[in-house]
Each structure stands twice: as C-alpha cells, then as structure tokens.
Image (cartoon, rainbow, N blue to C red; front, side):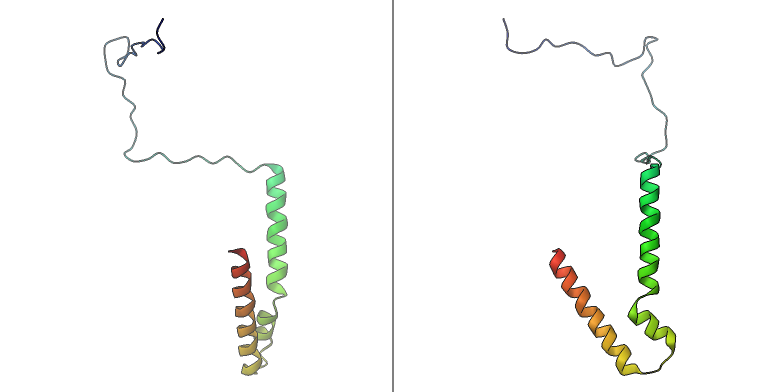
Length: 93
C-alpha cells in the first residue's frame, strides 16, 4: 500500500481533438461587485445624511460663510481644527 494518492491524467484537449481556448480581452478580467443589499443601502443613506449634517454645522465653514472678515478667528479655528485632526490620527494609529 502506498502513502501517496494515485495520479490521474487530466485531459488537456476537448473531445474533438482541438485545444480548449477561452477568448477574452488581454489583461485581468474586471471584478464584478454585487449590488448592495437593502440593509446596506439604508446604512449608506443614513451615513450620507449624518455627513451632510456635520458638514453643514461645521464651525469653520459657518464662520467662513458668515463673511465676518475677522481673520484672527478664522486662523485660530483652522489651527484648532488641525490640532484636533492630528490628535485623532495619532489615536487611530
């Protein structure tokens, strides 16, 4: 009795004696992504609405749209936002 499995020859040509050829464009075929499920669509819509609310209520954006012209406040808001974002990135790493 041998320890290895028996070797079975695999056919490399079709029954008519012609080689099996798959015709397609050169390169890697495109990846087909399935359509999102109903739950995923609801989730993505909720995320999009939440993102819009956050963007609309952003302090720096509101300050710039008000047209106040006080550059010191705007500069301070930019520096503060940059510091918060830097701390968030450091936390995520």
